[in-house]
Length: 391
Ligand SMILES: [Zn+2]
Image 1 (tube, rainbow, N blue to C red):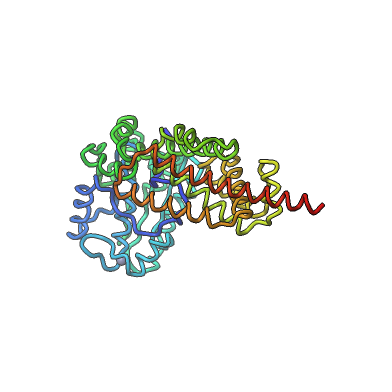
Image 2 (tube, rainbow, N blue to C red):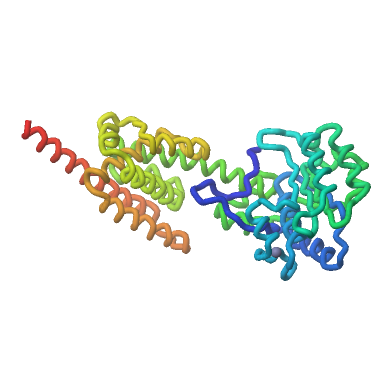
């Protein structure tokens, strides 16, 4: 199974800063936690248990934000007090999150020691202190015993929110000191509509493939999408490099969702426009001659980000970017800006539920792209012949 991602799409959006909220299928569990909270009966230690990919961590994080909020409204963190602002910035000093570090599989003894120190100190914001720790079974040997003491002798105004994917691997001594919340695999009646808003009609199939775990299903969709993005880019590359006809390109691209195709073209055009604005014209022109990736400092740094995102085959994207950027420099950016506007209009229409003839739409879009390319080539030939006449 691929790593669970809680974000539907890997894209250029900045990291969202907001308070955690429970997933729609967790409402009954959330209500119970909120009721306990209002009744002043929030347990000192909670253990959320259930299979991977159902959002246990999200539920625990949402609850930690509520516990730390200075003035909750309607059973939710207010989003406005100092504590909420600190949580939105992921810098609340009274929330300690102990989880395996990136690339690691275990929660180290040192991390648990830090939790114990944290529990021994006074709350910096004068309110509660919360520890979010999980998966419990990932704690290194010895770490569990260190934690036990904190579970046995709770300090005032502190809450330990633990989660586990495999309850049988959690020491009985830890289990017995926590109030347990067993979360089942949620019903598809609740998860499918949620997943559909992100992946469309494939939701049911993906849920089944992920044993009905909604976050695993989403991760599967993200993985598939990355493959599709690479495929779309491959066809675009062929189209642009080999001058394939718009009808041929449209035929190849028919198997993808028009929205995916349009989003990919928009993405590449935006990158190309950025290159054209930032790069030296000489660098861009030489790439046309060689049809190969020529590095400029701008693109070299962009390459780093692309590699980190790992979403797109870099060579494909860069080639097309350079070709389009070079068109802009020789023919001006007007035709491509017009094309971009058209893409955006089409994207909006698709998002608002329009159901156009897929083949016609893609054909038309590529006729526009080819026209812009031809205009660029014509200008380049004119420039070359003028230069030739001068010699
Ligand atoms: Zn607040």
